[in-house]
Length: 459
Image 1 (cartoon, helix red, strand yellow):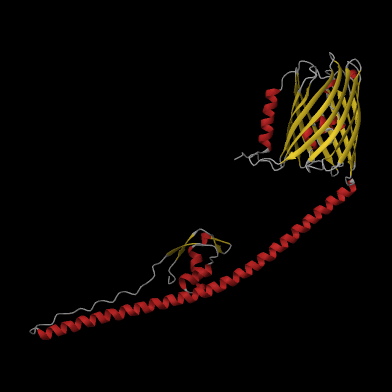
Image 2 (cartoon, rainbow, N blue to C red; image 1 turned 30 degrees about the vertical axis):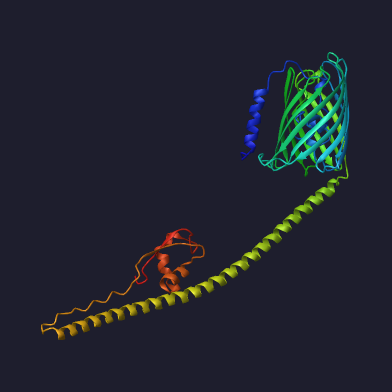
């Protein structure tokens, strides 16, 4: 049986893992560590757990699984550093994979060039899919898995050349806003390119504020990225900030803005250096189009209409439940009245039977007495006369009287009147029961499961 998971447990476990793994960097990030996308740059490169557009292929291939629309995107970026200016261009395409309704396929291309730094060309072929989590994993949403087959050509930083590689990742989502992902990237035939491990988390509060982190580890370099995404105007506008990509050791602060005017999505981002002001800074622009997606206005109206329909359905359901409850209450009242009448008849029959039993006992005792007296008289006649023995009549048994007070455990449906009817034969004597049990009565009704004291009705 799986243990229950809470946001605090997820975040606490992840924080401990980050502290355990985070080690000082022995050298700075280079153009080979750059990941494209203005949305990711605006969030300070902490985009792996969010990963909800075609650029997710570079951050977390699992994030694109079960995409509902065909999407195409492209972007341009320019970054400055002490080594030299870097430019990058990207294009990506994803679409649902029709043979499998939760799968997504796609392709992407990244080109980056840095003066005095090196060149990088990367072509990705992508696949991702959702899988229902096994019962042992307490997740309400399916798990996601994804991978890339990549062809890489990298120059500079000691050379490199062409390499064939693979990326793979998994993503788990919860119903309380927390998403976690784990990925292994750049496993290539080119030994000069170091594999990368990514451990990322994102927590979304009320669909408005997302806090994300991404711990990326490769040989001789460990980097922790973190960022925020705030949503406004029903998700049309996004403001972002985070720790920017530190190209060649220049610390950066990142800022971004996104406009989701479906089916068009525009994202811009920039970074400002916190040191070496004249040797850093970057900007990036991304454009995406969702083929077949409803317009933002249509989505907004549709969402409002869906909410109205949901409220209307809830109102109708509440009305139906109210009517059913009223009918059940009427039926219960009718059954209660019938039961009370039948109970009264049974109680009268019990009393009559008890009286008949007492009368039969009395007659039997009288008959026994007469029989004994006749036997004595007959014996007196046969024997010589003597003083007749004094025969004392056998006293009649006292009438059966109920013992008071009585105890009664309150059952569902018991009322003060039904108790008075049951024990006294008169529902109008309910006040005697009330006076003896006033501390166990709530809103005029006996509390179920309590033990009532039924007092003597004659007192």
